[in-house]
Length: 271
Image 1 (cartoon, helix red, strand yellow):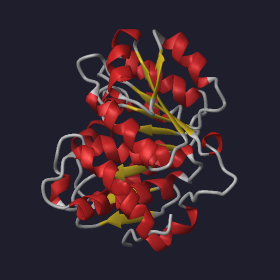
Image 2 (image 1 turned 180 degrees about the horizontal axis):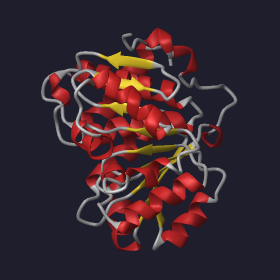
Image 3 (image 1 turned 30 degrees about the horizontal axis):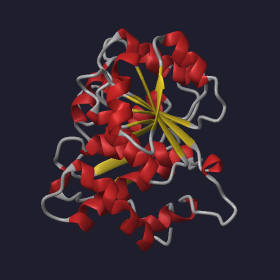
Image 4 (image 1 turned 135 degrees about the horizontal axis):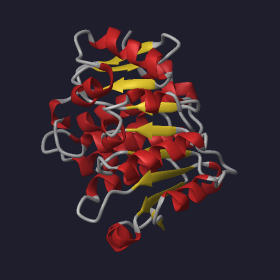
């Protein structure tokens, strides 16, 4: 079935006249090392633009100055080690966590992913947060209990689940094996849930084939999940809005433009 707004529009968060930033959710994005901060910054801005009331980048103190000077409305939180990250995850006001974009394929990234999952946070796992488990995927699957979205491209997918031969069937099998919603990126993006739900976001604009596009998509999903949207609905909405923002912007698109096109897409959706 095609992914169309009527399937998730009622679940898309809407502003309330008596609302505040504190009841619109707080999304934490794990920041990468000082030489690789762009991906997390793209994700964080996307989460904020899609409606999360608060967004923070959790990063090593050595890269704090980069994030602090490059971001304005997005906050920064220094986390030196796993213990500091666990302390941050204990904050009940944090409603979603995005891990992976340029985080590094390191023991630190793996430890932070496991910490967020064990804390019961709604999580988006992308890029390095997936690849870091390639040698032992069950180490990841065994701790998935909370709402979790995996957002692999085919290469990342193959490292956890094997080579893609049937995109719809493979995505559904992966969702059931992992216990997470799986968003398999591509020109036709497949979103599959462990309970058998599956939608296809068809014919994405070719302008999305640009560096950082996937980081923005992950940020959209994280920002929607932070607002309490069901993980499958959030994944479907994020994929559709991502593609529609590219259509709205048109030729010359770079990943930074996607978040800036979101207000026009949301107005069209009545949000």
